[in-house]
Amino acid sequence: MGKKGKRDKKGKGAEKTAAKMEKKVSRRAKKEEEDLEALIAEFQSLDAKKTQVIESSCPPPSPRLNCSLCAHPERDELILFGGEYFNGQKTYLYNDLYIYHIRKNSWAKLEIPNPPPRRCAHQAAVVPTAGGQLWIFGGEFASPNGEQFYHYKDLWVLHLATKTWEQIKAPGGPSGRSGHRMVACKRQLIIFGGFHESARDYIYYNDVYTFNLDCFTWSRLAPAGIGPAPRSGCQMTPTPEGNIIIYGGYSKQRIKKDVDKGTLHTDMFLLKAEGAAKEEERWVWSRLSPSGVKPTPRSGFSVAAAPNNRCLLFGGVHDEEEEESIEGDFFNDIYFYDLGKNRWFPAQLKGPKSEKRKRRRGRQAEAEAAGEEHTELSPPQGPLEIIKEVVAEDGTVMTIKQMIPAAAEDKGRSGSEEEEEEEEEGAALGQPVEPCPRSNAMVAVKHGILYVYGGMFEVGDRQVTLSDLHCIDLHRMDGWKVLLDMDPKTQEWLEESESDDEEDEDDDVEGAEGGEEEEESSEEESEDEEGQEQRPAVHPGEQQAQYVARTEPYWLRVARSHMGPEAKDKKVLKVAQAMAKTFHEESMQKS
Image 1 (cartoon, helix red, strand yellow):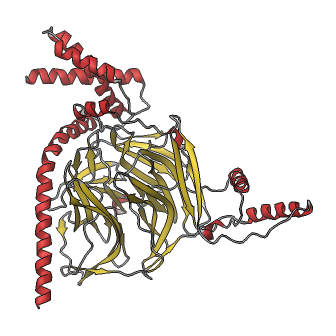
Image 2: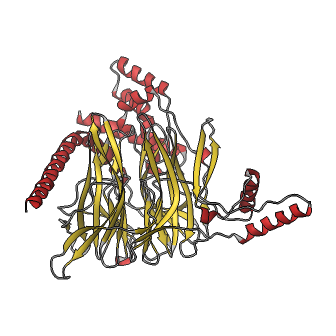
Image 3: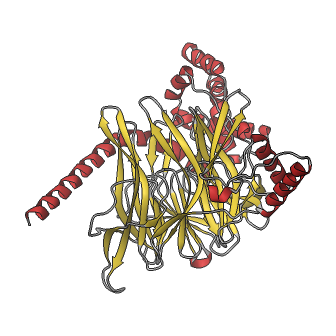
């Protein structure tokens, strides 16, 4: 009894500490969220002007991270929503909706009135109800400089049959957060974990909420047992029995002032529902000890349901934290978890090896015929590391490391020239190429085929955001196919400077918009600011014209975001000028 009492007191103390931290973060975040609410409302007013559903063929989506990718429950389509992009100086947020037609290998943009506000790091789940529904909860909106955050706590549903967005307003839901996980399980949505971050503080969650898809009500669960520590970015998988499996994730804690320590979680838990269907469900946490070969510690991995009662984990990054820098090892491997056997194992690509073997035999015969010595090569004893260097236009050298398991490689030969020769021959024969190592990729499974879109990797302080698309048959595991390639050398990257930082402080409202990024020179902006300070009283008509000219770069970006990258420049300019004029007239009337 004594030990149990101490444990209970310790648990209550931890709950009180977490509650105090949540209030502290909430107070500090309130001010910066109020600043961003005005910008979010401005974008929503632009979206509200859309009155028609327009679906049009388009190029593939621009590079982005932390969007959602889901398989349509009835059609051969993938649905991509939202995301973010960082070009080295500014962060851009999106709320556009794309449809990938699997059979045609083509993209379409779907514009629907009154969509959710721009966001990233949200969660999406698809259910087959009424022709298919896409449910979205939470996520975040960031200021252009990436130092202020607004965390959503709203719930939306996209009715796929009627192509309409609907916001579901129900009390008692989770607090605002991003990095959480959400799955659909037996007529309910289940949400776990995530984090909330302000400029100076942050908090990670391990709470569990359910949303009933029949009566549209939220419930916060209070499971018995010892559950996972607070975390974000974990693997969350429903079982056929209606239980939930949690694996891995990431969290950080402050060990002293301005010093944080990150934790890569590798533990695994089962959240089990007990009780009859008509009775109140009782949920219980228990720890799992899976067999097999677990994934190496990592964060930023992607997860999806797989055939044969399995789930899969793809990619991710393992950060080596040093005093002044963080070096990351990125992955492009696949691990399967068998739900029935409670067992992890790495995926092994079977690959088309016969052609390679024929070519090797041909080379060996030629060498023997020429009287050259031939040494029999032993099979590889460990994984093979391939290092490729890509030189960008600005001279930056990007090194991409790729680890290939020994069983999947089957090269077993030395000599860099011969390896390069085989790679060239393989490409000429149309053999599949693996996606480069990455984290935060978007994945979805349809008809037993895994699709991997985008993601990112880092080279020093430079972030490369991807927009390529690969797929692999999870039944055959005979290799990757490239559906859309991308050259990392084309990736835009703007070096951060002190002047840029100063401009961002006074220019927070001018970023975080979707669409094409248009950079204006700092010289023009400084001239405008000087002119504004020295400008004498002028006629209202002149004042309006000067206002339009001064603010035109901002409204150009807003108009471009509203009209899309394919709109003509002259038309975008007219819309931008009209927006600036309307905004100025309204502000003059209010004053």
